[in-house]
Length: 246
Ligand SMILES: NC(=O)c1ccc[n+]([C@@H]2O[C@H](COP(=O)([O-])OP(=O)(O)OC[C@H]3O[C@@H](n4cnc5c(N)ncnc54)[C@H](OP(=O)(O)O)[C@@H]3O)[C@@H](O)[C@H]2O)c1
Image (tube, rainbow, N blue to C red):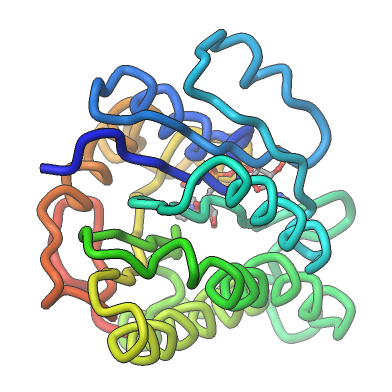
């Protein structure tokens, strides 16, 4: 078992990201939690834990990712767990498209800019922090609606496209990492529908027992992460540990 684990939560002021921080500060084997936020770090300060190192990052700006990595490397040589929890389904005027008539290239690009591309940029800059002899995990919160095989309803074009692409990106990263960072497990995770501002406008048809609290969602995902082995790299896991089709 690794003592003094160093963790990076990307999007630590969002619903699921903040849920992870709350779970991880309670774990005695966790030393540092590097926690990124975009605008305000108050929800991290309120946790008043000296394990938390806040880092300001808009993930669409590569220089800000590089600056965060520099700050992490000035404190530690190794990361053991990284979870990217950044994502958008709606944002200001941007709403998921119900039909082709709602498609716009600007909106499609925005989904890719936030939901897909940053994971590749993080993977590029995180590599030196993963190159060590301990097992490490690089997990990204994807979504089951990004599964091509599982798509029976259509709609939500930009979100589905960006998450399907994210899954391909993850698979590619897992292949390259298996050559250059052999102890890193790279996975996509589906959290299940969870009560956050992202899902709030779409919760009315979700049965109560299928809408997870942040506590339950993050406990379930940490249990999936804790059970991963190196053979799992490149796979897409649901909250209950089952493997989802790409
Ligand atoms: N909730 C669900 O039911 C559900 C289901 C399936 C998948 N997911 C996925 O789970 C992940 C987390 O979602 P959530 O439900 O926790 O949503 P959320 O509460 O809206 O959190 C999203 C996070 O993304 C951050 N973010 C958005 N654009 C950013 C940018 N340009 N730079 C930096 N950070 C940015 C937000 O930062 P701010 O705090 O600054 O806004 C926030 O921290 C997403 O990838 C989502 O697609 C969620």
